Image (tube, rainbow, N blue to C red; front, side, top):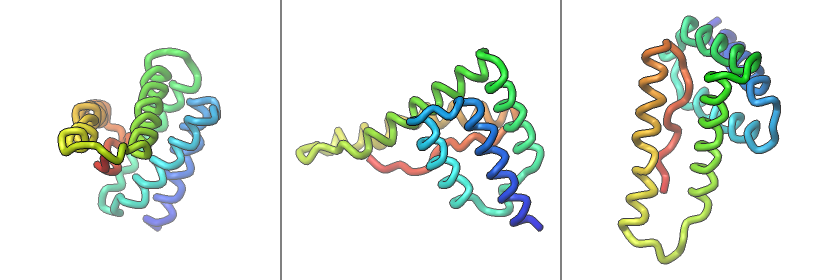
Length: 132
């Protein structure tokens, strides 16, 4: 039963998220990759139905209105897209400082997502990998 609930939660979150971003092309692939990684790396003990419900409600409002929720989702996906794109463009002559900056650049961003999740009782994926 928990596995079915997790699959249903993944499908609901993906469907509501796609509606919130209006199926825009670069954002839907970034969203799909982030959600896949979050659900694959997460454990069954991390699953909380109330957090899923709160996240779905947040995404529902993001899809209905062009308000604060929509802007948060839009900016999250833009930063995630830049983060994924930046990790593919590593220079060959990058120094140790450059690699360290690329690795730690998104720490405060991920911390803000964790605080948003904690304060609103949601489950937005905060950090998938810390690759340069």
